Length: 273
Image 1: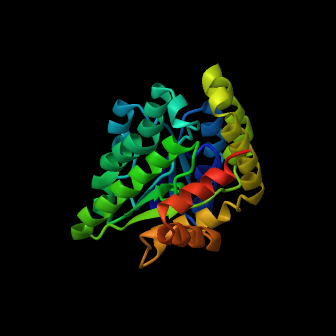
Image 2: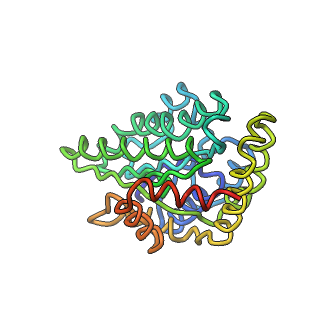
Image 3: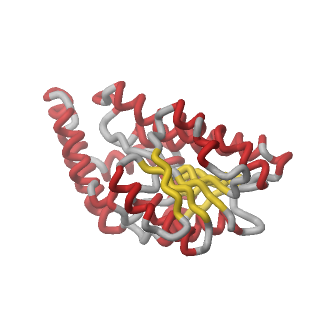
């Protein structure tokens, strides 16, 4: 049976990927932090729960000892979202955003690459439409996805001698518990801003909340992501990038062709109350 490591498998997209690949007969080594998530994963067929704090460097260094000597794939999915205007961002929160979404994903990849190379396996990164279009209020998250896009591009070229494909999955909003909580997360972020920043950005915060509510209703089925990951792990010719819907492709094309000043004006308009 082929094997794959999926990080952040306790909820959302990571859990959907784990369930899908286990049904396809893969041995899935699924990482999570909470005991409840690990117990849930343990009930799934062909799934091997791995307790892991993605930011614990010593735990990541020991990860290969808990995996097969030959690993057919790794799906770097674990991630968080830090929202808020750049001026009001806590530097600790910004550091955590980049640590979880960028540094830790590369740390995991480095740790398992010998096993991937032994199996001539695949490397998959969970990116986002946010990795090529920046929106106000999500600059920290955008930065993390831009970074992982760049690092994955470099890694893909560097691993060519071993014929190890590297793919980026670039979904828009996906219907998971993360998007179900998006308005509550926005409200918590607003509460943690200083009084002065809440006053200065009041119009923007209200507009962003309305936009998030609309996007929440348009969130796509997780099946789009699981099919893309499946293809990246199993196809003879995996894609370098997986844009999952026509709207995202059109959005990317339009933003690439439109002058930056026009894009800025549009984004400012849609995120202002």
